[in-house]
Length: 162
Picture 1 (cartoon, rainbow, N blue to C red):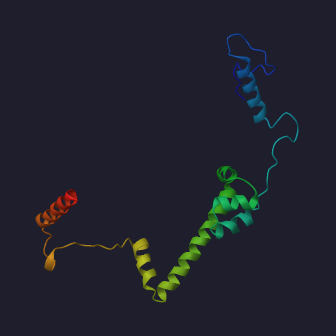
Picture 2: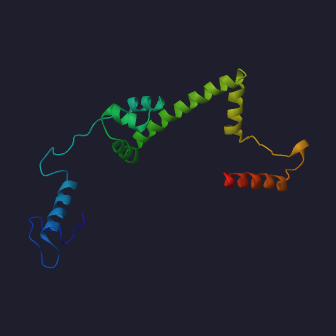
Picture 3: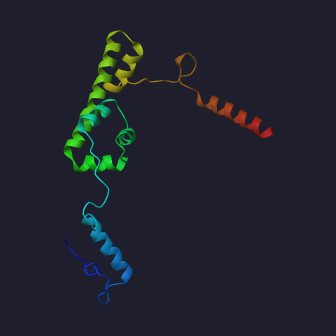
C-alpha cells in the first residue's frame, strides 16, 4: 500500500513541512478505515442477498429501490455489488430479461388474436413504422402561406386593440 508522508505518522506527530496535525489525523483515520476498523469485527455486517430471490424480484420488474427495500439495503449497495460481483449482475440481467420475454409473448398473443392497437404499437417499435401527417390546402393544393400570414396579422391587430 502506498503511503504518503502525511499519513505515515499515525501517532499524530507531524514531520516538518507536511501540514497540520488535523490533516494528518484525518489521513490516519482514512488508512484505518480501509483496513476494516481498529478492532476485529468492527463495521457494518454484510447482508446476504440470495441470488435466486434477487432474480425472482427482477423477473417481476421490481425497481432497484423496491429490491433494496426488500433486502433492507440501499440502492448504492445494489449498484456496488452489481459492479463487483459478476454473478450478482448476471442474476439481475436474467430476471429482467425474463420479464421482457413474457411481455413480448403476451404482445404476440394479442397480435395473433387481431388486436389492432398492439399491431400498430409493435409495428412502430419493432419495425420502425411511423405515422405521417401531411398538411395541405383546399382540395389537396399547397397551403397558401400569404393567406395564413394575413389571418395572423388580423388576429394580432385585433389583440392589440383589445
